[in-house]
Image (cartoon, rainbow, N blue to C red; front, side):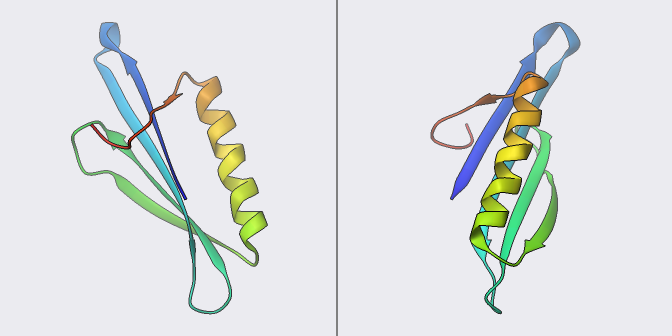
Length: 80
């Protein structure tokens, strides 16, 4: 369950990505893994833990909406 977004603004030399994964944990919990940074470079990674898959998916959707308002666009096929 992965989502990959990119934002490009050549005038500002801005080429950013934001990747979101929802994954099950070991103790019947779920995590939302967020990775972001400059396209082509390793990103910063953070995890947030949730009790249910639905909570993690809702959190992912909220992040997607915020990023899209900032100019990020969904990319199919992940990186590249």
